Image (tube, rainbow over all chains, first blue to last red):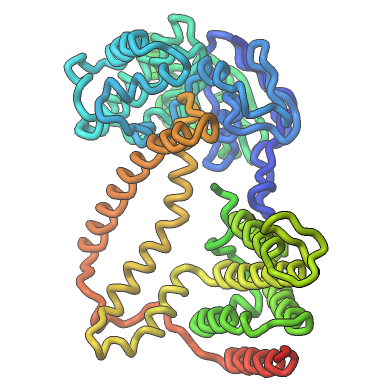
Length: 285
Length: 265
């Protein structure tokens, strides 16, 4: 399912007379089955943009095409369920959406809303929990008795259980320890390999470098750059103006370049960095 | 939810912003009291003029005030209609059972409408131009004499300022949780009454949970910074009663006198 934004603007003016634009003429395409990252500073409009993709917000002008469904300013609030079932959204700190008595019931909530029978929902709850790496024995526990990291996984399972085709992730690794971060991100990579479209909103440039295939850069409600992560992190203009910061490997390479190392292109992952260093050490030594 | 203007502070600077919050607070309440003195066209015009002039002085876009009416719209329309159709009259223009429409009824309904507008505008003006913290400081200052009857003034003021501080936080949190549950397929405002009420459970429970955790964190943060009790603490934010505040009191006194003169007895 391809997602296409055509000249989308969103104004918050209707809520606050003094507020400006949340989105300003954004056009972009998110390819089917891709792993796309959306980066930018706080308040650059990333979250506003992704809320448009499952019609939590509607554009003031412009259109959004999701598969064969089109959303514009006049789209009715009814009948959005089929769309929202196809587009799962994991919000920032999703653990704050847990509310049921048991983990199982909470995960079943989404599928049941989208019209699954209790049996089906129970089945998908089980599968989703397994997917996020939590044992089945937790199904009957209260979600509020879990640790923070487990709550996060259960909340993510609650989104995955509806079997969405596209998954939007808003800072999914915020506040997780490094191991938890890798586990969660690997899970999304796996889902992507299974044919799901992943849209990742993040501040974490290492997540972008390690996982994304394509990147869009937002600044002041506008789209200011796009390309593969490699292109973005090697784009002098974006990096020097401070719109995009570098992943740790690229930063390290930059420091090495001050000594006698030479990099035609900045490495963005640890593997690339170590390979480049190895090459140069072998050539010189 | 974010449409709630009433009770929100809007950063800005104008003569109204600079008034002493104690004065603003008391004057607002006093004004709401004297609104009930008005009983004819002239007196209502006077009130409206006063309110509009204050709005003008505040340099805030009137749009904010009109939006402030929105949450009360149902109450206003309901009351106005009630007055319009149930005011007993000797020569109604239209009559159907207990319902009747008369010139008197319409005039009274108009007065009620004006009364609502005036009261909501003035209280919106107070909250738009006064930070919650200033309001709670002024309440503390106003309640100070109660200390002599062992009333825990400082604690009450602290609870109040914390409660006020939580309002925008909870609104933001509610919006966030509603979005999250909507993404999981909840349709708010669809289906029968029972279904609608039920659809609020997935909002209320997370909201309670997060409020408790915020409150808990706040308590720890306060204790770790050595908060014990308000008695004998000096104030970082000092309130100063200035000349301009005296003039405001004068203006409001003048308004009262004028009202008493033009109202019909």
